[in-house]
Length: 484
Image (cartoon, rainbow, N blue to C red; front, side, top):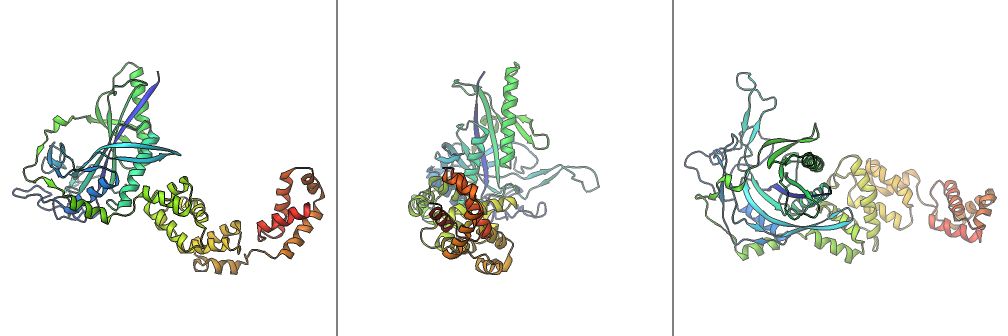
């Protein structure tokens, strides 16, 4: 039987506010346990929540970026469940009327463009954290502990429609969403610290069937690689279970990266199990059109707009423009490099940023904000390619030296110290060409018999004689003149 995979993602984005969503406690990561939880976070009697304006503005930014409807009036609700790390025994969230409604996200899966609609994005508070592994109690006994530093941390839960059809599409969507929230500055995107966590709702159905199959939810995946592996495993598990005559149970599961498998955590609740009702301690959240316009005026140029501008202003192909706008840092690096280059060299900058620079960053597991080669340093190197001082091949050697900080990372100083200036003297190149032609009569005969590969062999011989320093364009022109 042919099976169709149906995936919807719920993404918990920790908002980049300095304080929590309903209290003044710090959201700084890494503090000692329970040192960033005040009376409101602990749900002590008589305390009242107060809405964080900065969290609302970050939600508005996302809604504007996704083309969503920003609700002029939204309501906070109590989501009731009982767990040790939830001091109030309910979570303040939004249910019937979320702040952000609808919208869509467009992204690339390989070289194919896909658009996924969003159901909603709602504001809520995070719970605390239960500590089980290697936790020792006050008397040396093996115990579990509760850290409430995260309790009340502001979250924006972004829910997609179930329109993803493979693990590859789900990862591409998650990466695009991650890039967007970091671009907007509403989240730091640090997955290791829990700032961007994903729940994957996965089901399968026979190809052509309209009704959805029974779904499972794999909770709190904090890596794109783990997301892909978890979905792949869950798809295989569900198909094998059904084909063996079993039934998929609606449940919450966890991904175990050590065993590369998902495992059952608990039965999956439905909305009525949480007994949602409006929170009586919080008035409706009212967002005026004037507030929305103020936020819109403060927003950076969005990835799609920047991508279109890179194509029109710099003449870049659509693929290049898409790659250079995967992150705001990459786009800013590219534009800074282009502005420091002679006119008409944007494609050269794009090639080097997507090629040599990206490869070097990947080898050392760095992102572009950590690059040892600044945009100004790269621009100076590329200027020397553009004006014929060095060849593209020699430039790679200079780039490696800049990366290592040689000569203070100055391209001109490295070229001078290593004697790498390109030979552009026509007489000197002509002499080398004559010598190569004289020394390789058999290859010359092959070229004159119509074998183009023989010409490339002769070019290689000339470049070898010049130790790679001869101007390749001049070598090609002189060699063809002399051979004809």
